Image 1 (tube, helix red, strand yellow):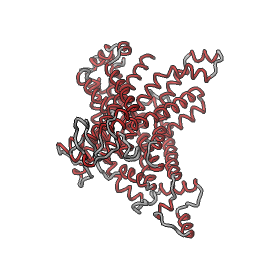
Image 2: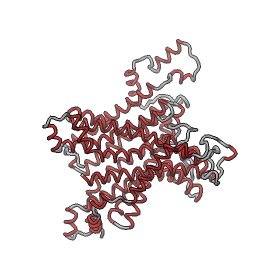
Image 3: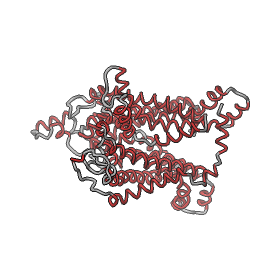
Image 4: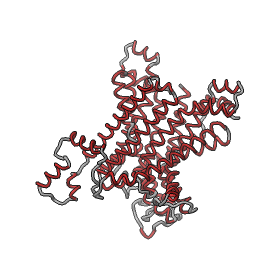
Length: 316
Length: 287
């Protein structure tokens, strides 16, 4: 039964990726403008070389055949050539992927450590702490990453001068220092959402009869919280953490632009502005792939935490 | 320690009291939204100056009695730009919300009503669209169709519809299982009449709550897209564009224009999110 669940999720992953790749390819295919003109930079090309070029890039083939060529090439790591930089898109992506991965990872750690921590604290301690966490998270949950970013730059880079406001840095510690403000800016709204969901889940569980029974049986508090409350609350907490961490992959673009980080997202935006469509295709495909993969991972983790899920009934 | 305390405080807070009373937070959120809507409608009448008139000599000049929020990076009156910007900043989210709610309700109600293969097809279709993060789809759309609001608005509508449809489908399924629906069917009422007159009105609290929250999310994403230069195009006054235009001021030590525009976005989004959350809680409590 459980195996079937995992196989089904894997099949859905592949279908999602196929559909996503098709949409990405179709969107660029439908884009106004002629790829040959983009390649030649507007110079006129003799008809015979035009034929050669069309044959080389399979532009004389029907749409679906072109999609097939593009997809098989992409699976082999060949994503085409950037028209602005005249370099392989895969190489350009490879040189930028670590910045984005580092940023998303750093942010995820902040979200899970601080978000879940705040949520547990607020859930277990009603009163002033709970109320203040609720108020602060209500506002920060609505804070767009780029607004958070400029406020962080103003306070911690311009006024306090604790962190740099721009660039990637060199060496591990310098890079971490350069990534700190971006990671916080990226994390802040997701962190608040995770904290709120965690708090609600803890409250919900604490109210359940089995916890009340455990209290009356005189189970030590630490054990009560750990085994009876957190173990059950872990299910919604994992789900919301997974969803928010997956969403970071796309929002990272905004933060990278503000902080001038040489990451995939900033490059995607730059390529979208300059209509470097091969790059847009390649990065979109990669980011959607990562997003879908994280979501599937969360689903699987969810099934491991809550066996009811893989047994068919979707637990609410 | 405090699990027991947590339990008692939950039960102490009377659900009925919370449902009926008008909490100040709710009133403030609603007031902010009404004010924002008024400014979006009448902003151009309220604005004291031309929002697009640059006076380069006034570059980043601070507030004065004539110019309450001073000048931006191009020497334009910040207050006037904020007032004009309300419309561009809110019309996009409004469009996304309307499209998503219409499409989402339609898909959800028909899927729940028809069930079977139709439901399965719709549901797995929605699952697949989930694969696209909204911002990414909007960037892709902007890359293909060029800057402006239309492409990002359509892209975000597509990306958000599954979220709306999923929740509404669940609610529609619950409602569909109610006895009064069966009774109406037995009486020979047509499916369309039952859906329009009974099923949808009974889900209305959820639809309104979802629309309110969705507006907030759409506003954050569209502001980000405009901030990135892929949405509303300068020199049009838009809050996201204004943050981007005046970002250099933060480093140069003059932050009012960027912060004021950012604050406008945050205040409106917080109001929508809080209102949406409260409406949802009320609807759930009433059920």
